[in-house]
Image (cartoon, rainbow, N blue to C red; front, side, top):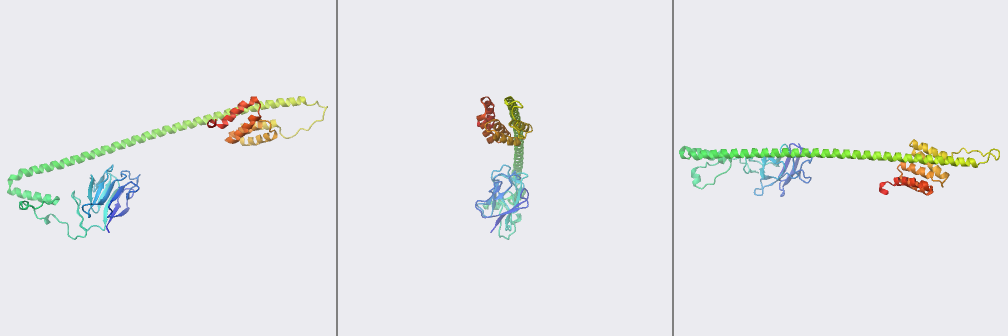
Length: 381
């Protein structure tokens, strides 16, 4: 059974080959589509369209194969000639997808015995035949007698050459037809010149279009990069503002803490002074030995020093000691809540500050409530 062999010559799949059954009714599609049988890389082969071309048997001649350009963006070239619509493929024809795009060679396995060259007319495969390709001498000359007898006029390059030979032969006998031959030559020259001009104009138009698309793509990339830079700058400024706000909040919290500890020290000093005044005078009562354990005030001062050194985990331990030493006082819960807040332990901070508010005097509940609101954050208020 005959197979179609696609041998990649350049592009992302250079030096590779694929083989497909030649009797496929739908044909073989080439492109960047992941489901395409002849698949190209989507990033490296960027000149290839998603569904660029299709190769299938000719419906009128099963021994022939036809290449159909599927309205690709950059065009299809067979043997360096651009294809408009469809064309026949011969064994060993070179197919290129877009100018400077990937290229592959179309092969048949097993190859045909005789392959007629691509000359703009319908090629033919003589599979299994042993006769050589007919030359111009193998055809009977086309003369006036054969035309009068109603013989069909052959087509192709060999036919045109033979017609010209016959025409020049008739000119020797009929000089009156020289004007017609001259007009035919001039018409041929005009047709060839017009075709060449149209092809060059279309090629120039395609080049200008491709350049315009490239410029638009570059402009789009510049716009995208500028937008990305502006977004990055805006993100950086937002992060800087957040960091500044967090630092200001931290400084405010520390200042409130310093003020609260100062007030606590003052109250403790007043309380100690009142206790001293209520004690009996020396000589009237036995002296009570002083305990070496730190007092409540000393522990509060130790927490203050730890806050200054940003040692919030150690401060939380001493705050727990204060809560255990005197559960009815609010200072231990307050200091523990501040320590938990500085360590990002919001749940613990909320719990301790709530208990501190419940035990604090009325004149101290407002600042504690403000600190609790900060622990909740903007979303939870």
